[in-house]
Image (cartoon, rainbow, N blue to C red; front, side):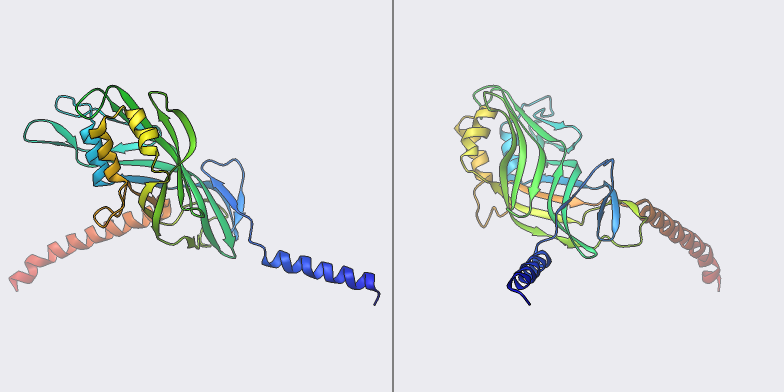
Amino acid sequence: MSRTTLLFASTAFAFLAGAANAAPDQLVIERGMDHTVYAAGMGWSDLAGTATYVASTNVVTAVNVISVVGSPHPASLQAVSPAVLEAPIRIQASGRGVYASLAAVAPLTQLSVTPHGDALTVQSLQTAGGFQVTTTKNGATKGAGSLGISDLKVDLQTKTIYADIVGANGVGTLNDHALWTYDSVSGPVTFKPGFDKPFDETLSPPALTFSGLFLAKASDIDDIFVVALNLNNIGRVTFTAANNRSATNPIGFGSITISAVPEPAACALMVAGMAALLAFGRRGAKRCPTARNR
């Protein structure tokens, strides 16, 4: 065999070996796609699921401290469409309304995965919408302000959560701003979507929870929160407390939970199961008097 032939064979072998060891390409599945993406032995044409941001107790306290007080309801929080805001009001003895909790439920718009045979590994995900906080002058602020946080993008490779920020008082619009990092993720990052679905189907992500959200840059307290919301030192301290990682504050700004939307077939089975239980209950109720008479 000639040297040229040996060199060609060696080069070809090295190329094939490199291709075999190379990481699979990432695939992006989006909500309402106009094409089909093939992964894990199936074709995916749509994306379902939601992401719920749940604010920590410290964040809820901070929002209540800087709230615009209504009569008796606070009016500081608004949803950024298409997200839905869940912020129930609790009326205090003084008659002042405060937020009991804060959560924003947003639709998933994009899921980036890496295929491994019949399984998929989540690389990143994106959502649409969020919430906005509005302030006026009170004991924790210097005057009017507002801060919107929306369109979250969770990168599992860097453990960073990006957001679109819209802030008053000169902050402006910051797209894909590295807002938080997360400490841990629970749930199956690698999952098998299954082969019992039609060929062209909607992909539902696994249930994942990202917790321990702390600012990627501590300077964002002063550069974004204080400026946009027009906070004085009292207001500043409340948000600083949320970003203070400690044994009593392990979750920081809160958590983000990914949930799959139940499929129609699963919903039908649930309804059928409930109907069967109700029917069984009725039959049991009819038999009971006879049993007692014996």
